[in-house]
Image 1 (cartoon, rainbow, N blue to C red):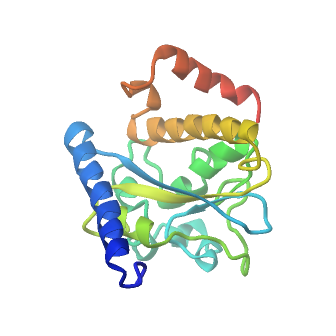
Image 2 (spheres, helix red, strand yellow):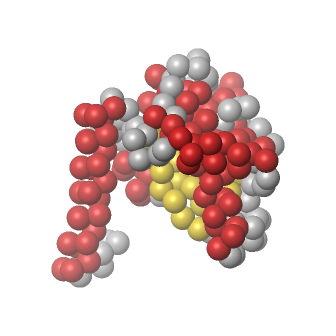
Image 3 (cartoon, one colour):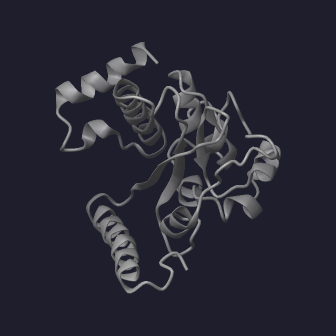
Length: 209
């Protein structure tokens, strides 16, 4: 349906998803695990980063105790990380605990949901819970071993000019690095494409939003 039965669009669709599958296979072979990011921009009135884990806004209103049950863990895009994280974190803690991705972004000056600061988006806010890509290429799909998240970035202060895009990209790099280091013992500093100077620069981003 997404290709509207157009032959060229179907080719592009298949190549796009085929590339992701190929990349994930390569990551698993080289590193044994990885994390899927599906990055977008949203146009909602509420100016905050929306993190979609395949959980609807009504479900994020539930208590941590309920979110930690298998009913919700089993179709969360964080399923594999819930099962295998080294920090001993529960599903709810990975979603909105002190070292959740949204909380780390919020601490750095970028309000995000879900997070410790903003646990649930609220009913009727057109929250992006995660779409086809996230459902297909994360462990929300039982055939996939990658945990991941759909990241929907607000406009003001994040995407509205070059300086803000650069600032957010650096802060996001630090946040995802700390998230992975805490829960998987994998950080951006271990990646061969980052030299020491770059790693130090990312750490310094914490000094400003």
